[in-house]
Amino acid sequence: MSTINRLLDPIVVPKVVKVKQTFERPVIHDVLGEFKSRLAAKSVMSQIKPGQKIAVAVGSRGISNLPEMVKILVHEIKKAGAEPFIVPAMGSHGSATAEGQRNMLIGLGYTEEYVGAPIKATMETVQVGVSANGFPVFFDKYAYEADGTVFINRIKPHVAFRGPYESGLMKFITIGLGKQKGADICHDLGFGKMAENIPAMAKVSLAKTNILFAVGLVENAYHETCRIEVLKNSEIVETEPSLQAEAKRLCPKIYFDKFDVLILDEIGKDISGSGYDTNIVGRYHTPFCTGGPDITRIAVLDVTNHSHGNANGVGILDFTTKRLFDKFSFEDTYPNALTSTVPTSVKMPMVLKNDKQVFQACIKTCNRLDKENVTLIRVKNTLSLGEIEISENLIPLARENQFLEIVSEPYDLPFDDKGNLL
Image (cartoon, rainbow, N blue to C red; front, top):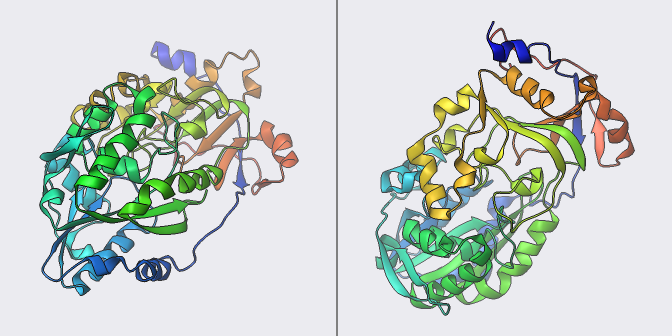
């Protein structure tokens, strides 16, 4: 028996129960109908003329209903007589290569066959000006050469800094459409300056390029679209902060302020820029964010297929599996850290041979003598918090919370003969 096995085999993984978490749930029931209605109400298509080439910029996040909305946008642009094409707007993601970013879009469902427009991917940019605070501003070459650019993105809290513009439209312009070069410059002074750099640089692109309009999306805690705003170029700067405030109010959470162990089934770039929402787990890779629960040990079991081996964020967790380690791609992960200037997020935590050992290692190292009373929570990912699993010793606390409902009897987690969850 290996020493690792000898140390971990005696550790008992507690029984768990399924718990339903309830959050405020505003929702648009007919998302595509609402989107078409918003486009018509703002008359944004009147800016597009027959024969024009229009870039539709799309990012790397897994956003609810987005492929369907991009398909509608492409259709409406064609109805106006123009020729739409898709451009990846994702900074340094996809290995910071055109082919890598193209593959990310295809993996997320933005194929030419589905959306009705080809993907034109490049890492080349055009410098369009200099921001008020002295930074050169870059813009995707294909988008710049088009007759117009439009884009859709979700607005949400950032995982590494605070400000009126975090993850959303202005960041999409500066870092997404700025490609790796724009992302690199914006991050150069660290996340402490991001709240200043993002709007300063985005304002230059709004003034100097062909951006026609943007679509801002807000999701509720169930990863459902609950607000759609079509914003003309001149409306983006003024409107986004209120959408950011709404997104923060609707964020999901784990309704336990302090516990011993959190297990994430998966992380990935399609879930969050850091692989998971650091605001939810209370672990941050910069000193410019705080808050969230107090958790002694956090581990992750896998990385999503859509992330293409980009396991950014694993470095600030405590344990992971050999399965994730084998999928970890230096070429897909490291460009993100080199661009963001935060190497901590791509370090490798302790790697264990299977899921069960990850649970056991978290329990063994959580600094409790009474390990049989360890408090443990397991979630699929930080986008899927409507139903979670909690150790049975958390049942009394769950019953005291009006937003929690226990929906199962206690049961043992099902591990297969290799020690992995079924």
